[in-house]
Amino acid sequence: MSTTERLKKGDSAPDFALQDQNEKTVKLEDFKGKKLLLYFYPKANTPGCTKQALYLKDAREELLSQGVEVVGVSPDYPEKQKKFEVKYQLNFPLLSDTEHEVSTRYGVWGEKKVCGKSVMGITRSSFLIDEGGRIIEAFYKVTPKDTVPKALKALG
Image (cartoon, rainbow, N blue to C red; front, side, top):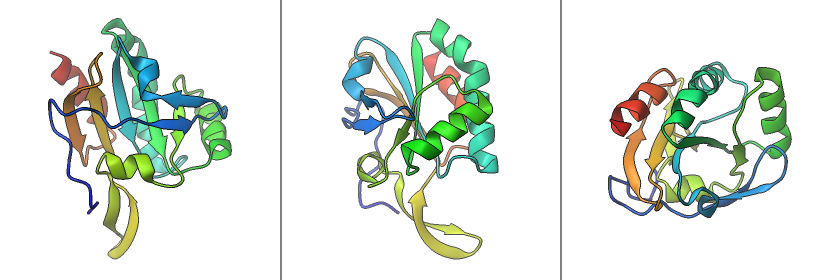
């Protein structure tokens, strides 16, 4: 598991400034005054990550109607994120955390088991962040299918 402690309700969301799929820098402060569903996924264009992105794409209007923006983060480079966005016509920023700095601060980077082998990687997780940058709810080890329902339930 990551060396960083898990975030919980009421914690300040760790700051970030990462390049998106268009090589534009996106920061946590860009969302001040809005809610943010920040989700971390292991690898663009893989089955689980594609399902999760499509669930979020389909729910984007509903989330926006509740004042929630969506941003994805993975260790993929911006070029790979761009191909993923174009292939599935995604409608939100996909951030590149190639150095694992942000995923470490959120407690989602670390050792995990894949096909019985220990590897370093992102544990699929999502964080609902309020208008002031505080964690409304943290969902560690969330499934692709549960990302949206858990966020909507936390919104009330």
